[in-house]
Image (tube, rainbow, N blue to C red; front, side):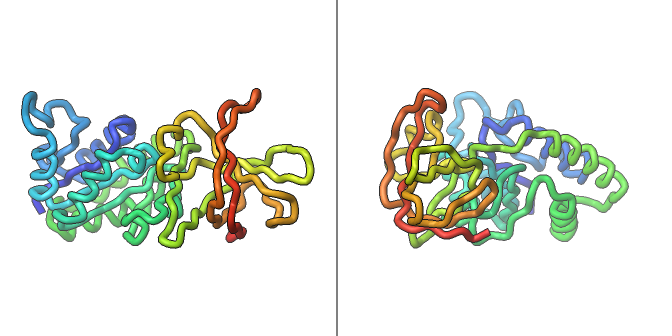
Length: 258
């Protein structure tokens, strides 16, 4: 492999810059071998940036994808990921802090081996893989020193609460419950930790919270931290004085899975 293409959302620039620093100063990857659009001077003025990105995915060989809620929402990032799927010799997805495997829903990433940005053992594996591909020379003392600095940075980041859930092939979402809402009997209402990707409704994602709503006894009562598998029967967008715009998610099926 000739280098590393870093696929990411521009909204995650600070995290990506820290990853680039870990690759360069900790693992010894030469700056010329890293293609990252957030780095100054990567995209020349007036050039076809889509062609440049596609060419670099193919030429670099390795694609390191920084998976965040913003990444999953971005059509451009999905284009990069598609190019990586076809042209990359080695695709290495990194889940950012607060992201879980179930957040990937039915996306192609759901079946890939993932690494987590806040796990030292996963960065050790990335380091070993770069060594095996001959992209770097071993210097474990330098690597572990820089890795400790990186881990301090990552663990100071606030956990993302805007997870984006996509359905699996059967139309089910796996979500995490954030809180219960007090509503008149005989109803139950629970806030989802994140939002559901619902076809045709993406334009509302940034301006509403998502809540599971059903009649008492239809399903088990829930609590914060429960992992739930549900299928949507219908949804309704409403505005409340205390929480603003909210989308009621009426389940057609719901089970607690953890």
